[in-house]
Length: 183
Length: 280
Image (cartoon, rainbow over all chains, first blue to last red):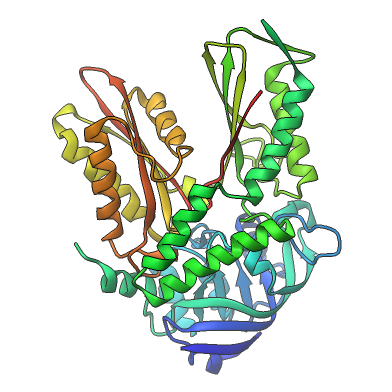
């Protein structure tokens, strides 16, 4: 089913999305990958503030290639989400409502998604040129020294993603493979 | 004896880094196109069409195909009658990578130390493999390697008694564990034999072979065909979201090995299987 949503979004929207839905996101999302997650995790442990309000927001696991002149961003596809699994549950417990990446998640992350009524989306891996066309603007808001791994605030329009794990714990990676397995 | 200037090598490496990150080879494009026709899952088909669109946008707008523009793997086949003048060959290659990643707006993804992880900010050093061959030419192959799929690659030190079935099972295990993480449809490079490091290198080199070109050893060709069919029956599909296209090709290289060993390396590459070659 095709869905159009605006980010940030609340519990009600998150719980209306189901594993397998094709979703177009418009609004604001934030990028963070390995190094930024590590810093945010350490900041939380030390009781410091995070670079953006996590509640009701979406994090895109992505580190872009440099933008050419006059463009908001370079190639901008998802990175493997499992490297953020160590950090994701703490952020979900703070109210993070969505994560965009690719690849499998741990049971701990799935449980945190269910516990908090959030969503794990996949964007198509290796389609960074295509996905960059749905990004209207990009601004580094924290950890500038991390280069491609800095935290960016992105304005997106109809950014295409697929719901993999929904708030009920359904996991498209598991169900879809069964459907097409022939062995 | 032929003399090649180091700066000519640098210039070519620079251009090749940019070329490989924006254009796939014709065989890869055709393989994706064919997969989009035959894929059984509607979502899988849609994803494959997006990947084709992605290639077109990358080429027309000069946006890297994937934001992970890789660690620059460079194969050099150096004719033993070639003399490189004006600098060290290794430094000429690294300078080419440095210039290519800067001027081509490619992502710098290399960290100086695996534990302390400070970015080198110019994507060097490259991973360079030298072969000394006959003749007075240098053949360069640049193959930027992304780490989504590199992280899912495996090496198995099997026992000789495990035989061909053990080898097949090892390859299938690696592919199934990789699943959606490796950005399928994948190209699966396999090395069988040699030593621990030789085996991994055979697998890496197998990724640069044109898709659909088989080994000229008949049992190896049969294995390539059988494994491709079995991988595509796994159900993993495009993006790992289900379907009949999990791999575009399986390429296997073999080498003599020790009486006590049967090494198998599986180097997985995503659908952005980048490589280009030039002869100087």
